Image (tube, rainbow, N blue to C red; front, side, top):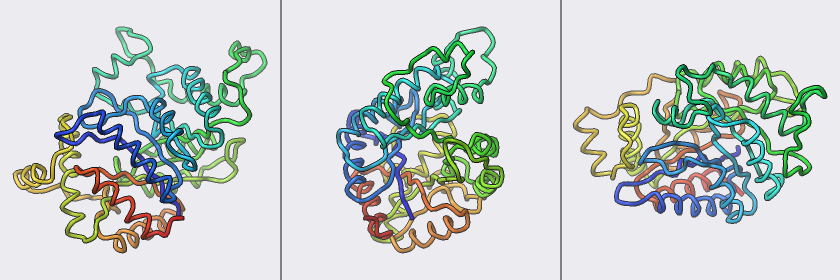
Length: 334
């Protein structure tokens, strides 16, 4: 089993976004030593709770800080940007760190309606049509020199022009994204921690409809999920109170930093605790290392995946580092 990390650079109450970015750098160094496979940076805009709106900048720094990890975006929200600009950014990263760069692409806004409007490529009275499928195909063509000879963009020499290319992953939390990844022959990462209900159906659909391509011969899927691991089940549940409150707050548009355990426990008590997950598996797996490993392996077997991407958000950075270290030891990562 391979384990990877999705880092949203969480900002804990009482600290700063700069501290959160420093924590990301420290965690990436640890992940590199522990044997995690990938380290992806998320994209979120205009929120006090998550500190990384520009994953490509943070990836460039993490490349210097690590030696073995594959580094990538989880992901770039492509509808905000031109495909050429994204291709240039990630070709630059590929030139700096060849063979180590993943370009995870999503269509979600990564922010609210006002932020989405401010990020628009065109400020028209009516919104632009949803051209994400065309954008994605254009991005692949820029990265792999695939424009037809008569296409005007075929004359553009994307720089830096190095052998190979970053590996493009399609990110999603729906059956649409699963079908699109399958039709294009791309690797697929499903955000179970965002939308746990369709996880099994999406990955099974992806595998059933997969069309081999120049990018990928066989289907390759990752499930991304939350984990809080501690020495005991009780301690893990206590630590997880912060992320449970964060999830409730975000659904209500409350963008404050990650609450302390004391603040979270009080808030959960006031609202009657976190809502029960109606899905086959929870968004967040919590517990002692052996217990978490058993449940994660059970989920991976059921989905037929050999890689899970772990999102861990707790208030104390030391507890976050410890959670990833306990998990790595439980799985015997090299």
